[in-house]
Amino acid sequence: MTSFARRERLQLCDLLDEVGEAAPTLCGGWTTKDLVVHLLVRERSLLGSPGILVRQLQPLTDMVSGRVARADYALLVDQLRKPLLSWAAIPAVDAVANAAEFFVHHEDVRRAQPEWAPRILDADDQRALWRIVSHGGKALVRPARVPVVAVDSLSGRRTTLRPGADPAVVSGPPAELVLFLYGRQRVVDLEFDGPEEHVTALQSASMGV
Image (cartoon, rainbow, N blue to C red):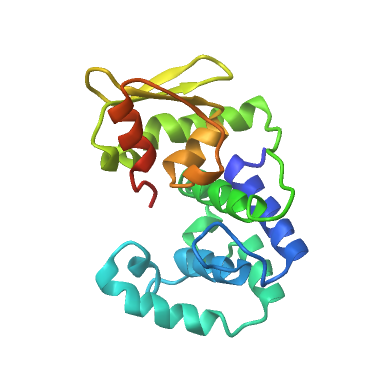
């Protein structure tokens, strides 16, 4: 059975082919080609990938990214579609490391296009996304510095992301919760409850990786 991460990778690549290399994304000022380059450097370059997370090493990432970007866009998308000769080619590793990465970036492209609409995801996909919320959300909400509870509006599941009294409660489908936790606050459809100051702190926090 194809993993959620693998399906998101393939669907993202199909969309990248469809919209072309100059289409907008939700990743700051990145175009779709910039996004493809980022994803390839992340999983294929031992020299360039550390700088994605470590600011002091960003000049190396920029150098490697510049080299990768010289290639034809269609070739780059094809390389992204087939993660050969990298850790992402190992299915078990790919499923854990890339589920959030490819879902979020798939939505970064989808939701930056005119007349986008939310996808209808099946129960298995929503469960995969809820695992991202419940397992990764604790680290992602730290910048909010307030107690936080997330609620899956589809199933009623709840998880405490940051303990404490009078939490900010954020409710919605797992897909919307994941996007919120990864800093896409402007494009999600969620409900908030709890003390106003805690909700404001959560909504304005700089979250994401």
